[in-house]
Image (cartoon, rainbow, N blue to C red; front, side, top):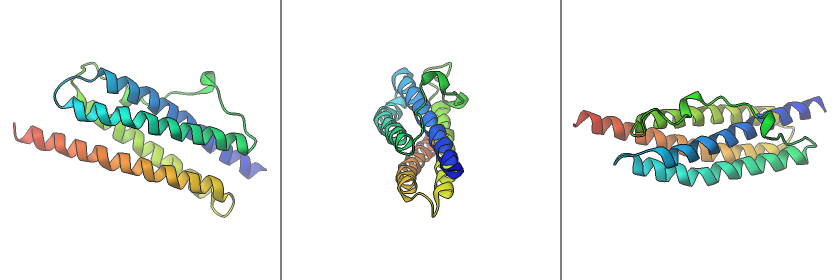
Length: 155
């Protein structure tokens, strides 16, 4: 059972990270201003639903493994770089924050995949499926960052 406790802990951490991402994506999708912000805001607004669905899947799996799903008072917050920036036109800060959050999520899902290898294929398959979506977000936002840098060079 000790192994199961480790997996539940990893799932709870991923759950916490997903809910924090929902909060910050929602805030930034509303807060940002400016011509360059529209694509980013639309992408973040779409991603809120996907990240929330990740949290729902994680919560169900925690329950299925006999764990307790944490409530809001147990959830730590750590996404300092994803806070809405001082200036609502600072799109770059948000893009960089998203990239960092996605990289952290990817690392967490990789830990979960390693911990469940040859032990818990159901959790592993879920983690792989969510990992694929996180990697696709990361690639999208790395593209946005490259686009912003390209724009900056030509102005």
